[in-house]
Length: 140
Image (cartoon, rainbow, N blue to C red; front, top):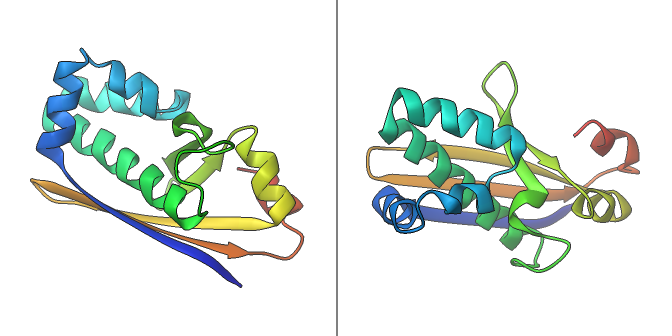
């Protein structure tokens, strides 16, 4: 059963300006531990790819917060969900407590898609209700 759909569009230059204004602290506020590792690696190799990564993760978390209908209210918080990639490149959502328990209790699961161009990023999240949820979500 469809629970919600969230979408977000972001101009990369806005994230870059925020990153510079906060001396990079925004990345530590938004990104979870696994995302930070990827971000720092990409930023070191190519700053524009690093900013695109940070921007897509921000957009995806905004889209997710819309899809679950909470916005940025507990149990939803920036680092409560990470957007990681399977080896195939497919992005997936990894939940952290208390969001993980909340999603399991509701038997909800999210799917995310990301895209970026030179100046813009976009993310879309679809949240559905699944069988009992506990087995499917425990791996994320």
